[in-house]
Amino acid sequence: MFDFQGRVLLVTGAGSGIGRATAAYFHRCGASVVLADIRGDAAAGAAQALDPNGSRSLAVPYDAGRVEDAQRPVGPGDVQAR
Image (cartoon, rainbow, N blue to C red; front, side):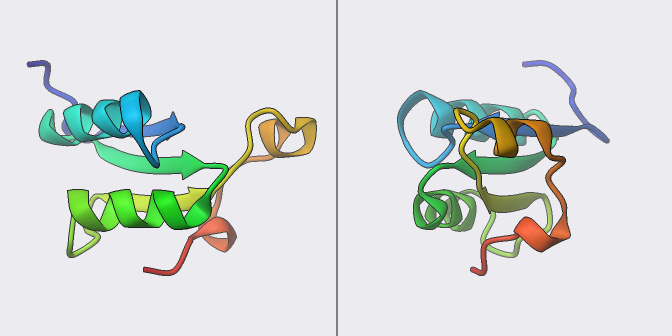
C-alpha cells in the first residue's frame, strides 16, 4: 500500500465496479476521496459505505463525457446529499 495521507483524489465512475474499488483502495491508503459518477445516487451510496461519517469522502454527480462537466472544477455546490 502507498501513503496518500493529506492527498485528495477524484475518482470517476466511483459509484460501482472498478471505480468504486479504486476509491476504496485510495481511501484505505489515507486519501480523502471525491467519488464522482454520472449516477449521483450511486456515488452517494458508495461514499456512505466507504466512510459513514463523511470525514474523508465526498460524492458528486459528474459526467466526464460531457465537455461542460469535464471542464468545470468540482466544488461544494456539487455535493450529493447523503
